[in-house]
Amino acid sequence: MNQSKKAMDWGNLGFSYIETDVRFSARWHDGDWDEGELVASSEMRVHEGSPVLHYGQACFEGLKAQTAPNDDILLFRPELNCQRMKRTTERLLMPTVPESLFMNGVESVVRANAAWVPPYGSGASLYIRPFLVGVGENLGLRPAPEYEFRVFVSPVGPYYKGGGLSLIDLAVIDLDRAAPKGLGAFKAGANYAGGLMATQMAQSLGAQEALYLDPAEHRFLEEAGSANIVLKMKDGTIVTPESESILPSVTRRSVMTLASDVLGLNTIERPVELLKEVDDIDEFAACGTAAVISPVGKIRVGDHWYRFHGNGESIGPTTQALYDHLTEIQKGEREDPFGWTRAV
Ligand SMILES: Cc1ncc(COP(=O)(O)O)c(C=O)c1O
Image 1 (cartoon, rainbow, N blue to C red):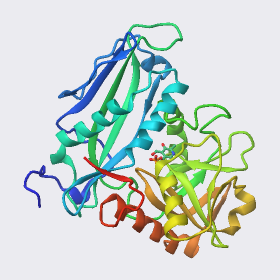
Image 2 (image 1 turned 90 degrees about the vertical axis):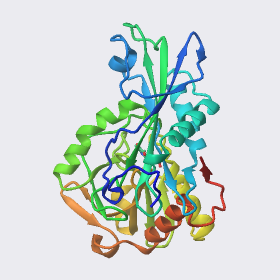
Image 3 (image 1 turned 180 degrees about the vertical axis):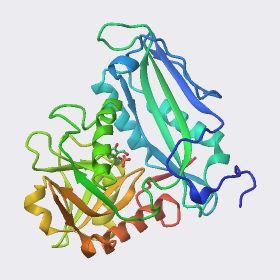
C-alpha cells in the first residue's frame, strides 16, 4: 500500500465525517469573489444574523474522488456539479461561484488531502462537499450581504449498510419532498431539513429511505431522499421518471447514457404512474453519488410491499452491468469513452 496514505481501516469506513487536514474557503463581498485559500480550521465563524442560519440561504454539491490503478486521483464529471450549483445559486439569489473558483477549490482540497484519498482497491472513496452559505449581519428577509464558498472532503465507505452493491428497500410515506415550482430541482439545503422526518418514518417501516411521489397528485414516481430512480421494465426498456421537481442527478444522467450507448438498451425519460405501472417493473434502482447504483428489492406503498427482481431478493443483471460499467469508469479500470473522469 502507498506509504504516503493515512493509517486507516479503509475497507470498513462508513458514510460519516472524518476530519482531514485542510479545506478551501473563499468569500464574496461588495460584488466580488476573493481568490480563496486552503485553511486548517474545520470551524466557521458566522454572524448571528446570517441568512443561512435563519432563512436557509444555503446550497451544496457532492461528488467523489477515487484512486485509479496507476494511482491517479480521478474526479467524476465535476463540471456538472459546478453547473448544477450555478442553477441553484440563481434560484436562491446567491452569487454564482465561477467555474474556475469551483474547480480550483475542489482540486486544491483533494490534492492537499491526497493522504486521505482511499487507495485503489479499498472500496472506499473521497467524498467532496462544496457548499455556499449566505452570511453577514442581517435581519430582514433578503439575500445575505456576504457569502462563503467552502469545500471539505471526507473519506467514505458505502452509503447504505451492507456495502458495495447491496439491496435496499424504500417506503412511500405521507410527506412531500418538493412543491410544484418549489426547490425540488435545486440542491438547496432547505430541502434536506424537511426530508429528515421522511427518512425517519421510512426507516421505522423497515426501509432505508423515503420514496417520494409527485407533490401535486401523489401518483407519479419522483425520487428517493438522496437518489434518483432508474427502472428496467419487463419489456427491457430503461425508464427514469420525468419531473420538474426532482434533482437532476449526475449519476442518473450517466447511467442512462451507459444504458443506451454502451448496453444498447432502449431508454426513455417519462412520467411513471407508480401504482399503474408497478407490476411492469423488473429491476428498480436508486442512483446518486453516495448511493452509486443501489438495487431496490422492494418498495412499500400503503400497507403493501411490492417486490422486484428475484422476489426482491436478488440483484438484476442490468443493474449489475450498469453498476460495473459506471464504477469501473469512475475508478479508471475501464476505458472512459465519454471523457467523464478528470485526474487531479
Ligand atoms: C435529492 C437527491 N436526488 C438525487 C441525488 C443524486 O444526485 P447525484 O447523482 O448528482 O449525486 C442527490 C444527491 O446526491 C440528492 O440529494
